[in-house]
Amino acid sequence: MAKADGTFIYVATYPDENTAQDDYEVVKDLHHQGLVGAYDAAVVTKDAGGKVHENKDETATRHGAWWGVAAGAAVGILFPPAVLGAAAAGGVIGGVSGHLAKGMSRSRAKEIGDLIDPGQAGLVVVGETKVQQAIQRAVRRAEKETAQELDVDPKDVDKVLAGATGGR
Image (cartoon, rainbow, N blue to C red; front, side):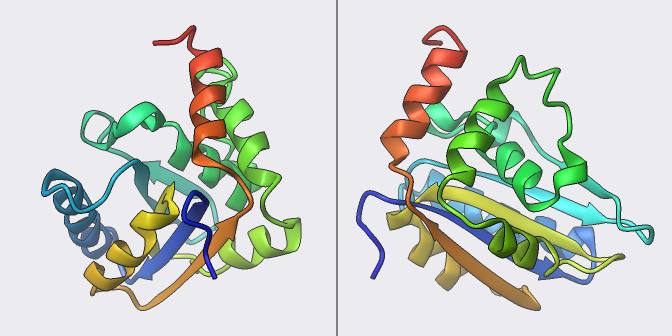
């Protein structure tokens, strides 16, 4: 049973980026309607060579203190060679990645990352556990999906973010 104050990573796969973007819009709409709280999400694509590309609408995904960093941190955990822009984020992504990684084994992270095949797209959502069920009910276009409950308190993620950004 999921803890009420836990954190989760949700990954769904799609045949293409446009289909993934459609479900990404559904998740954003849930937030705008007040049905889900703090989360961060990104659409990722995996090219034919297996390289992962993160595609985000940075402004639209800033929910709570998570403001666009948690999904990037999750992408770094799930697709290790893809630690995209960690240096550019001034260590914020690295700090959050380390925190999120404590809640999941490396083998499980690899298993989730392998869910997205080359040539496919995926939706990666990181958020508070109470958000997970609403997202899983609303996302309808996914070919495959999985979620991993992390032993990480969302308040701890908020603290890491506040410390890394000087409280902004």
